[in-house]
Length: 255
Image (cartoon, rainbow, N blue to C red; front, side, top):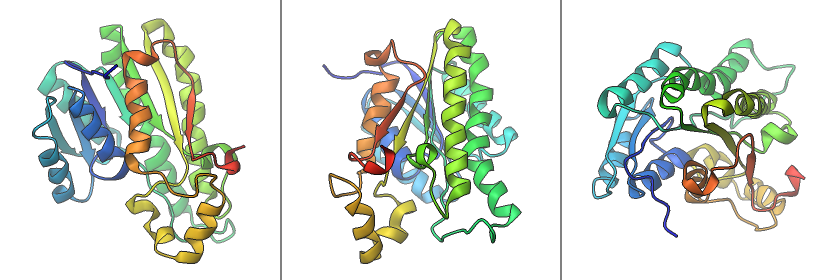
């Protein structure tokens, strides 16, 4: 059975690279009209738009810093202005600290930035999208968390705390929004072969250590995270809410 999102509208945050870009492409191929945010590289954003030109779904890029409520509102307003509805929201935008951050050395600005992007960024777009979904009496919200949000991560404690907050946000919203027929779920990837993981991938010793803890002995491809996101957005998951789908190659770190 082919997954179809024909005539639906999605907003994907952080859609110019990695998991976000893979999600935008899969959604467009499924017939979904997609508005995605990017922050730093208009060139990368336009590459995603160009890649999707032959897809049945329309794709539009919007520059927005979703850690700021005004930008999150602008992103949702752009989608509503262009397509007149909003069916799916993928809260994907995130950052990670490549260099270890010991808690006794972590600065307030490092903590604030991590939480602002990874947790507030999810809250802000959800806050702006939900009124439209309530009015439609239907919606899908999919947040991207992490295995670090479930088990914690030494030297990346602010990242783990923010991603753990995303999981709690999803759990709470799933029951709050269920009466409005809005399903709220999350995916929790482990290591994924994206720009964010390059600092580990390009160091053989660190890469071997990371893959050694993964039974499949490799990092995920972005598409392998995007496909479960597509599933959660589709009619194949109509009785799922408040769930966290782990995508970690069987990693024992999430046991």
